[in-house]
Length: 591
Image (cartoon, rainbow, N blue to C red):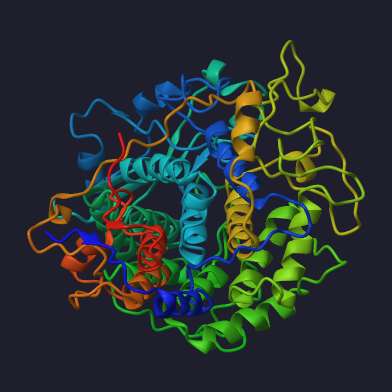
C-alpha cells in the first residue's frame, strides 16, 4: 500500500494546472456562485425532505425525524388479501390465512392512501435530482436524509412486489386503502382504524405504467446506493428488472384502486423507457433506443405534456442527455420547454392544479439546458420561478412550508392539520403543526391564492409535488450553491423536528474496497502516478458513470477520504494534495 506524501518541489506548474482544471466544464464540479436573489437553495432542499417523513406510514415513525408523527396504520401488516385469484395467491399468502403484510411506505398527499405509482414517482424523482446534479445533497448536508427516504420507499416497493419461485413478478399490491372511504375521514393517521383494502396487479390485470414507475424508483435508489450498500443496490436492481419484464410481458392499464385520483392512460412506454434508462446508467441494461425528435419518441409516444406522475418523457430525456451527451436529447428538452411557455425572468409560469409542482418540473428541464452556466437565460429564468415559489410573490408566502418568514397555515393535510371535535377542512382550521418542507400548490395562472384548508388545489401537497421540487431545487444548488449551515438552526428551533435523529449509519466500505498492498492512494486511473488526470476522472465518473469507468483497484485508490465512497470530495482532496495544501494521502482518520 502506497501512502502518498507531498514533496517540497515547486508547485507553480501544478497550481496552474489545477486552476485550469477548475474551469473545465465537467459535470459534477459545482461552481461557487452565490444566489443573487438572496434565497438559500441548500436550506430549501434540505427542508423539503421532511415532507416525506410527514407522510410516512407504518412502524418506525415514533421517535423518528418528526416529533409530531407516530406509528400509524400498523394494521396494514395484517391486511386482507381480498380479491386476488389465480396462481399469484400462493406467493402472496403461502400460509393461507387470508392476510398480507403491506405496512410501510408513504401516504400520497394530504390523505392516507398509498399508491405505488406516486411512491415510485416521488422516489425516482429524488434519485434523478441527485443524478442530474451529483453531490448536491452532500453539499447541502442532507445526503443521509436522502438515503433514508429512498430506502424507506424502496423497502416498501419491494415488500409489495411478490416474486414467484423463478424470480418473476407474481403480483403487486399497488394501492392500499379505498380513496372514497379515506377521504370521508378527517383525522390524524395515528388514530385511524378504518378498513384499508388492497388493490392488486397480476398478469391478467396489470398496469404497466405503475410497473415502470416502481422500477425507476428502485433503479434510481440503486444508483445512489451502489457504492455505499452494493448488496442493497443489487436487490433493488433485481426487483427493477423483474418489474420491467412484468410490465412489458403483461401489458395493461388496469386502474382499480386508482379511481379518479391517478387515472393512468394506456401509454406506458415513457415509464418503461425511464426505467431502462436507469438500468443503462447502472450498467445493467442496454442503451434505450428511443431518441426523440420534436416531440416524437417513436410511435406517437408523446402528447406534449410535462414531467409528471403520468408522463415522464422529459425525465427520460434529461436522464439520457446527462448519460450520453446526445444533442438530440438537448434539442428535445429545448423544444418541449419552449412549447410549454418557457421560463422567463418577470413571468411566473403557472398552469394546472397544484401549479408549483408543474413549474418545478419545467425548471428541471431549464437547468439541464443551462449546462452548469449560472448566467444563462435558462438558469436565470428558472431561478426567478423558484424565488416566486419561495416567497417573492404578491402574497408574500413561501409555498414551501417552513421556509422563510411566512407560509400558508391552513393546509390541506390531515396529519399536520387533523382538526378534531368534528372540525374538518371545511371549517378551515389552522394547522396544528408546521409541516416543514411540504410544497403546496401555490398560486394559479391568474395570481390567485387562497389559504384555506378546503381549497386543496392551493394548500395541499403530495409526493409528486415534492419530487418535482427536488429536481428544481437540486439544480439551483448545483448552479448557485447556498449555505448548508442555516438548516441546522431551523431544525434546532423547530419543535416539530427531532434534530438528534440519525438518518443513516455509514455502512463502511465493502470487502472489495479493502486497501491492499497494491493500493496507491490518489491514483484513480492506475497509471502509477497521482496527477490532475486522476481528479478529472473521478469527476467524470461521478457525473456520468455509464460513460466513464474506473477499475476496481482505481476505486480503492480514489477513495482518499475513506468514507461515503468515491465522490467529488475525493477529486478535490487530490487537487489539494497536488497544491501542497494536504501533505498525505489518504486523509488520516481523526479521533
